[in-house]
Every structure is written in C-alpha cells, then in structure tokens.
Length: 495
Image (cartoon, rainbow, N blue to C red; front, side, top):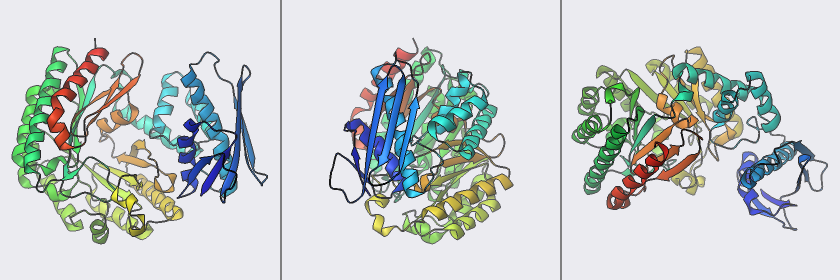
C-alpha cells in the first residue's frame, strides 16, 4: 500500500509513520506530498502553542477523520517537544487507519520494543496502578487486555527481583560468541557457521579473554557488583568443551565474587551442539541455567529454516541435560514459522508438556530486514493474521493451564499480527538477566563479537549505546580499542 502524506513534510516523521502503516499493510510505503497516488492520501496537520498541542488527520475522498489534543510543558527541550508532536500525530494517523481498515491495534500507537518499561516508569514515579493504566489507554490507545498483561509481568518481575529499582549501581554482563552450526533463515544475530572457522575462533577467544580480564579488573578496583552474566551469540556451545572450560575459568578468575552472582546463563539453543563433555564443563563451573530451543516440533519446519537438528535430538538432549544437572532449562517456540498453522503449533505445545521446562519463551516470527527469510519472502509461506492471533491465544491458554506466568515481554518491527514475544516461567524460575535487559534499570556490559553495551547513568537514567563489531576479523583486529572505550564509559558513570 502506497500512502501519500500531505500537510506534513518533515522527514523525521517518515519512519514512525511507516512503522504504523506496516501494522495494517504487509507491504507499505509512505511518501510526502505526492498528488497522483493509487493508494491512500492522508492529510495530517498539527498546531503547537501556549494552550497545548492539537493534531488532526483525514483520509481524502472519505469521511474518515480523527483529532487529538494534549497539554504539555512549554519549557521542554526542542527534542522533547518533537517527541510530543510525533506522539500526537501518530495518534490521529493510527486512528484514521483503524477506521479505514477495520483492524484494531490492541497495542495502540506503541511500536517500540519495551512496552513494560513505560508502565514501570509511571509506577516508579508514584502513579497509582489505576491512574497509570488510564493514561496508557487514553494517551497511547492501548487496550485493557494488553495493559493487564503489562501489569501482570511487572508484578512478576518485582516478585523475582524485589530490588529491581535499586540495582543501578551494579552491572550485568553479556558475553557474545558469534558462531553457530548453521545460520537460521529468520536470524539477524551476529552468527557465523563455525565449520571452517577454526583460526578465527581461536583468535576471537583470545580477544574475548582479554576483554573479560580487563573489565573484571576494573570492576574489582571500583567495587562494582555483577548481578547476572549471560553467554549468548550465536550459540556459545558451538565451541569445544575445552574452550568452554577455559572461558568459564577466565570468568571465575577475572570477575569479582562470581559465587555471589545471582544468575549465570549459557545459551545452548541448538541441540546439535550439546554433548556430555560440554554439560560436564557447565556442571563443573556451577552453571545450571541453559536454553535448549526447539523452535518447532516439526522436522519439516526445522529443515526449511536451516536448523540441522531433529525433533528427536531436541528431546534427547533435553533429557541428557537433566541427567547432567541442568536444573533450570528454558525452551523457545516460534509462532508463524513457514508452513505452520494452528495445528502444528498446538502439536509443539503438546510436546512441550511432556518436558515441562522451567521457562518457555514464545516468540512471534518477525521479518527482520537482513534475514534470509525477508530477502526471499516468496519462498516462505507464513500464516495469516487470524491464525497468528489464534496461535498466541493457544499459547496464553496453555501456559495458564500449566502454571507458567508471563515475566518479560518485548516487541519487534514487522512482527506478525502486531503481537509480541513473551517469556513465561514457573514460579521462582524467571531469568533475571531477561528482566534486566528489557527494563533497562542498570548498565549491561557487552563483551565479545557483536555484543552491544548499554551504559545507563545511575543518577539520570540516560542510556548510551556502544557496540563491538559483528565480524570476527574486525573484532580480532581491534578488541583492545573496544575494551578501552568501554572502560572509558564506565569511568564516566561510576566515579
């Protein structure tokens, strides 16, 4: 769908308007000021003065229109004023598109990744639940069921981490290992097929050890505690058992008070990377929280998306992990994989019931721009909006029946059905790292290839992003520089 916007010509509006358009139309393009247009022409206007901010929207050659106004602080910075303008214009834009299509967006105008962060902020600032919920409904057009989900998640988070609002002077650490057996069709993580990468793996691990050592030294010198450590990637269990052993030994030697870290997680998402030797290494270093990710319990689906393990191997490696002391296992399922509908997803839930992992993350497929799946959409037939919504409802019902509670949530651009990804867990088995990364209450130090750091000022909450290179060769060439940059940021925050 081609949407021509009149009345507003500021290019800063283009991306937010495109994101909202994509909630309604699979293929959409927003252009400014075109007169000849086979799609829609929408006129948007706004006014800003001492009485407040007003916006209006109308679809030309129709009687569809919407208006919205709000009061705001005249002393805001120019950046904050534009943020309020963008919010107000988005409100009327979404309103006219809902009228035009008949599709109601239950997340309202929210297209960002962290809805619960918005509610956390309101509650932390002293709003009552009732007042905060009313504001979300009025100002963002979020529906009651999504607000209730957000509140349920926040309640679970504060049960799992009662001091969540007081951890800004601690840090968590993400360690990125950018290798996998193969690259999945939907993936955009920094992940390289490990076969034939032996030289790069060794060089990369040398740089990784260096980063861990230097970061650990700084944390010890400044008496900074670590809340959680998360080994992600890629698939961290792609490397050998010997390499894993040396890596965890480095962690214990370099990081302060490892025995007091609340949680250490190792992604073992690809079952074909799990061996008895690697599980023995995990147990040796007191690591018992891992992820084993089926994604689907259909072998044809696994083959189609480029995962070289089978359903039978997933189940076998799950039981092997239990046998070797893994007491907190997460599993991932994806709604909307190619060729899968309600029947196939229901089967995946039935198979999950036989295993009952401590936590289950239910993702909704997102067409990420750089993924193989997005580049070749014609090859991958996915379910329609109605089926996607039904599958999510099935997941919600199944988790409720089996005692799982939602404890974190995030959303992505181009996500099927404009839904969400939800992490569920049995009581007391929530991943603290997942809560910390989603709610952005403390600094996350990213170490390794493709690892992104988020430096959060413990006094103001301001976030500064810094990322290591995704390519192993670039990382190998400059890991010392990236380490020094992180130490410089840390020194500015924790003086």
